[in-house]
Length: 384
Image (cartoon, rainbow, N blue to C red; front, side):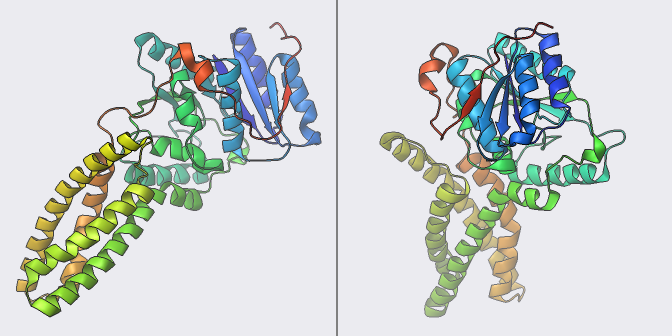
């Protein structure tokens, strides 16, 4: 078992956590990534190295995502087949809770079901208002964007089975957005998750938190915002085509069908490539998957078209102007369309995350050459 701790300018709480982990389990491997903290923090990293931790160094600050990826690369190369628990360096994750997540990984491994384990806080007791409000906003936004509920979207305490390390490592994004992208893509890629309750610890009024409720919630909502942009573009194409064709022919239903055919084609391409990023690798698999997605999208498009026709016809019969009726109809169908496309059209019915088996993980996950990296191995692990 590996405990990975990304650290940027850590305080005095890092060393007690590292020492406590070794005291609780002398066989644990602790990897600390110094994300360009600078010479002033070298003594802290020297202390944790003396305790027995492996310390990896970035020359400059590259952000938490880069630090995590550096740790994942090291784990897959130096300890193939080992599960990884990620924890923060600020003392908010206790040794007891880190071990709870590690125990959860062992239980799932024994059951043959690799699961991403999330250490989630209950946000009870004396929780700073900023943190309580920020988490409430993040939970609601996350549910809307991801389609599933998570009680603590900001948790950095995560248990990652070795089979999922490569998948987690390769998710896009930098800094805070990277950890959110991992969560946002779990259901899409068939990755199972479960929560483990942990203690809610806030130190110094949570002054060390880098979470920004408004900015980071917007990042969580990015798929929904992209979908809205794609829908607006399709709406514009559809509306222009409808008005032009209706003016030329005077026939409402044929004009609706023709306009929707053009706009749906535009919407499918953009949603597949940009919004849900639902392509796959390999020419044959790409073509086959695209055809399946196109077929599912066609079913949705027909259903939406039928609803569109019914609503437009009904509203215009009641004297509502065509443009107003069009806007009202599309607004009603927007949320439904997003949910169906996310789960039915571009989602997966079977797990799509490539699982790397423990026996061959050494060959499947070579360490990445991402620039120069200083590596401090512990000379001799201190006995507890």
